[in-house]
Length: 227
Image: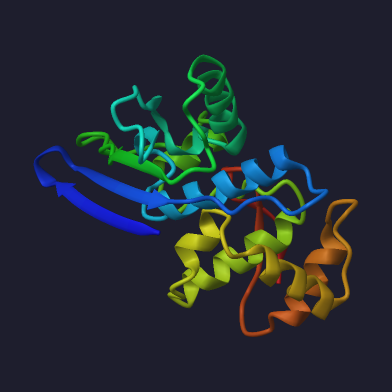
């Protein structure tokens, strides 16, 4: 893998070009699932320094066929990209361009534009706003998008933030946290497959004695648990 990065400070943008070759799937494995997982890992690396609200545009082409029109993914929010979006684009291109091969050396170019966040001189009010809106507007609110074990994800993200841990940004973006969550649940011996409530919060608070866990009901700051 080879990476080149260029900043465009005037436009608050960054360009990153990555040259990479995907690993072949193992025998008897699902090639589509392997490809989607490989692309997801590639994009996590390419977008590691990009915030959820930043706009991202991507082009991908074979290194040997650079005269061909590259695959283009139009500018969209970083959190709107997924492996399945990329797979659908690859599928369309492979049907229209027989020379394109995703297993050859690929050149991926990512342009990201950091979007300004501000509300002039007005104070941002939470009253009447959806939590999902506030999560994108206020840096003090972090939205956990895990499909399972959300409470464990939230605990680890909050602790890395408080401790100024270098893994905080990766955890917040859903990277590198899965193993930490599994280790935490195994250590506490707790199962969150059916969700979590006060008993589970008590167990977490007993484990993290050096921290204080407070859970609020939405943005009204009416607490439903205080350790």
